[in-house]
Length: 530
Ligand SMILES: Cc1cc2nc3c(=O)[nH]c(=O)nc-3n(C[C@H](O)[C@H](O)[C@H](O)COP(=O)(O)OP(=O)(O)OC[C@H]3O[C@@H](n4cnc5c(N)ncnc54)[C@H](O)[C@@H]3O)c2cc1C
Ligand SMILES: *[C@@H]1O[C@H](CO)[C@@H](O)[C@H](O)[C@H]1NC(C)=O
Ligand SMILES: *[C@@H]1O[C@H](CO)[C@@H](O)[C@H](O)[C@H]1NC(C)=O
Ligand SMILES: *[C@@H]1O[C@H](CO)[C@@H](O)[C@H](O)[C@H]1NC(C)=O
Ligand SMILES: *[C@@H]1O[C@H](CO)[C@@H](O)[C@H](O)[C@H]1NC(C)=O
Ligand SMILES: *[C@@H]1O[C@H](CO)[C@@H](O)[C@H](O)[C@H]1NC(C)=O
Ligand SMILES: *[C@@H]1O[C@H](CO)[C@@H](O)[C@H](O)[C@H]1NC(C)=O
Image (cartoon, rainbow, N blue to C red):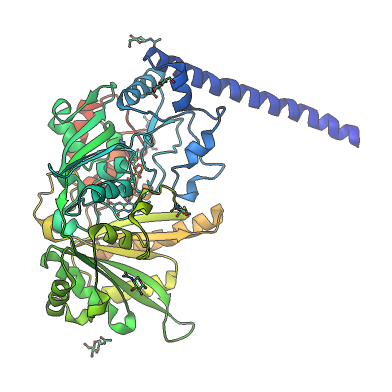
């Protein structure tokens, strides 16, 4: 018996040893070739050892995991990069692009790693990661009213640096402080000042990028087409964004927030119905987001009900906000004590769910507690009837798990032409829906269950949302709406039209012009001309 086991174990042992050995050899060859190329690009070996990682070098896993914000992509089966490179300056970014090109690597560009479907750090094809985490300079110039921010910075760092210099300027971008500038702004970028100031990309005045040839370009040298494309078309199809420069926007020294919950028994349906159109033209200083969720009934035990949470930012004081809503939306039943006055920077903390004892320094914290999650998006271009809303609540209550976020558009968004930047969902979009499911149970069975639930809700909503094509928001990455396996135009057009509608055609033209060999590609990149 004993000898039999030995006999059977031996070849396996040799096989495992051999495969580990050949893997090591192969990966080291990949590493060595890249390292040699970087040296030829005049980066010293000592410098290379601090920025280039393979599975055989220390810290590979921690560098990889540091910016994975969705546990669905931390499984042993999740495809891993052959190399990770973390450049320290623009010329190292350029060297990385040149070497990846020369050696035939597919590059995934990662800044904050918040991509909802992990496209910045995983792929079905062999790939390397160009990770921007070390490029984080931020210069705020309150006199000029501008800021320069590198792609690896987070939104929290950006808001903090603005607050350090001035309390009369802010920047219209996302709500979650750990989101990365590189992906967020090149994908459009919206937040709670969207009705007053539009998207992040509406304020960009310059950018530094590294193109597919490794050239470092600014607004003038990249030309109008590329400068247009990287303001919402997704950087990853066109170039590596190194930095953006933008105009700050004025904010008052006192802003007002509230967060109030209304259950179905509080006429939530009628309130949501009215909110849909109210947000088109009401005072641009007001933004109201709705969380639409299935919850336990607050009064009747073991009964499920629906709840709409109204979360507001008003760029003004509570007296003006209270009088505005008492006139325009009395049904909401807002009370004076619901309205909290604070500075703009504290409103950023409030919206990020920190309590009122938290100091702004928390915005510099890059640590993120990840869960398993999936997001999808839609645009509502015709207000949903109360009958439709009632069916929606019933569906949510049946599914139990999935929630929705309604983000009001209107205001300034109605005034900016849809062709100004690649993000086409402007006038005519009453609001955007984010479908949201987050869970803690590990395993593929749980993943499949939750992916099934959120897809079911998305399918259920089909009659109530935009069609031909059904719109989607690039920054709410959703590979369910189509992927490129081999980067044909036909595959790219499927998701491309949903994200960009008519602007897709110009994006394809720019892509064909600046990157005809499709060096910058991912599962949802812009294809070259057919
Ligand atoms: C918790 C959370 C909250 C969010 N809140 C908001 C919100 O309020 N508003 C909103 O609009 N969106 C929001 N999002 C979505 C977010 O804007 C997108 O996920 C965005 O793309 C993230 O940017 P990133 O740099 O962190 O992501 P990454 O995963 O690093 O990148 C996302 C995409 O951009 C590409 N990319 C990244 N860096 C560069 C670069 N330097 N050059 C070229 N291409 C690059 C990547 O290759 C990938 O395709 C949120 C996401 C999460 C997870
Ligand atoms: C080294 O760099 C030079 C100049 O950038 C380039 O022409 C040459 O092809 C490179 N050689 C290798 C082996 O990469
Ligand atoms: C490269 O290494 C040298 C010597 O260690 C160091 O002084 C220099 O700052 C490094 N350069 C970069 C860009 O990291
Ligand atoms: C709900 O609406 C009805 C009819 O408009 C009204 O009588 C009732 O007071 C409202 N309930 C609440 C809690 O606002
Ligand atoms: C902070 O919040 C608590 C409870 O939510 C409240 O009692 C307190 O008054 C608040 N403090 C300030 C300074 O707003
Ligand atoms: C940073 O954030 C993480 C995750 O939320 C938290 O655990 C940690 O305590 C925070 N650190 C500081 C210094 O705030
Ligand atoms: C591209 O992919 C599609 C579907 O995935 C397949 O039908 C087609 O043959 C592929 N084309 C090439 C050129 O590989």
